[in-house]
Length: 251
Length: 249
Image (cartoon, rainbow over all chains, first blue to last red; front, top):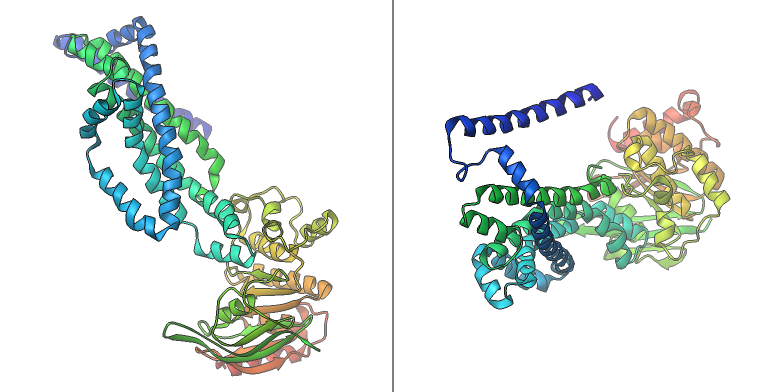
């Protein structure tokens, strides 16, 4: 695609979203919909600017929960996936256990988690962890299993030790799938943290959304929602960024 | 000439499927031997048995006098697919068989540079496999086996997936390298002209379960080049003879 075609594509996207924003703005103004039901984008942007202090502070709380939840999901998910992959016993015991746990609606677990771990950071990072954990396990498993058999044989012909085959063949071969799992898990971790904050918290963006809408402060609700969305997007692209280092996914 | 590889009474079945009958052959030092046979005759399996990649129950194979039970550091295997690691560059792919195998000595910088040069890969050391043509990937695959400086080179239809022109060109390079280094080569192929052009001996195999039905010595002068295929009438005679044995003429 030529550079001018790319520029044109960007212009089309930008124009489309600008049109949506304007339609919203003037639709709300002309139809007389009450601002506490649906505020115009201009009011939301103004609110975002005015309340930037508290929104940033609450974002930082949520970000901390998401960060630790995601890190723990990777730190536990990857070795557990490796265990399930290499051990027949684990495949018959640990794997079905996690599949069963995954089938529990995690939103339903939130009140329990809050009862067990309190209103602080711990219960929220556990919620973020619970949402992110399963995609990490599944994608790592899929990646480990996707190592081509002909390459395994090749490594045997080169007299590679099992450790070498693991680190120098299976791990790199599993990375693309693992990264796909991270791309799914990261936004889920954000959802987990926010759900945790809904159910029991004194701070965080989820709490802000809940208190703002509870007090009829709809513009602040929207502003907080935008903050959550932005955070989720930034985190997603932060993960996707690493794809350039594993370009061999297509090869 | 003492045998480097000695195969005696080897058979192999995968479950109920008998792929190799009763195979016996001796392969001497610095001999270029082709195993020629129809698809599915077990010739690739035979090569894997020699390489110690596939276990077998019937008969025995010895390499330098010792029974083959596992891959040996003195052997280099070139697979049908180039099997390069997409995340390693050409240089690291070439040296993979050296890096992984503690029993193989790393080539000196001069020897390695010579290998890269011989294979026409100079300037591509930092490229990754997806940036190379199919023919170049196969050169890297051959180079990976050669970098181990093996006594024996086992090749399983290494150019089977390539177009005819690239295949001819790589065969010539293989011939040139072999004429210089004189390694023992066992080449599995289903191309009759390729087998005649390259080999000292051609072992012709039957349909599955494969056995060796004829051991044909190719007495064409060396060094050979593609002009043999056109100018030496003996070349045509060998092709006709092998074609008859294969039942295609």
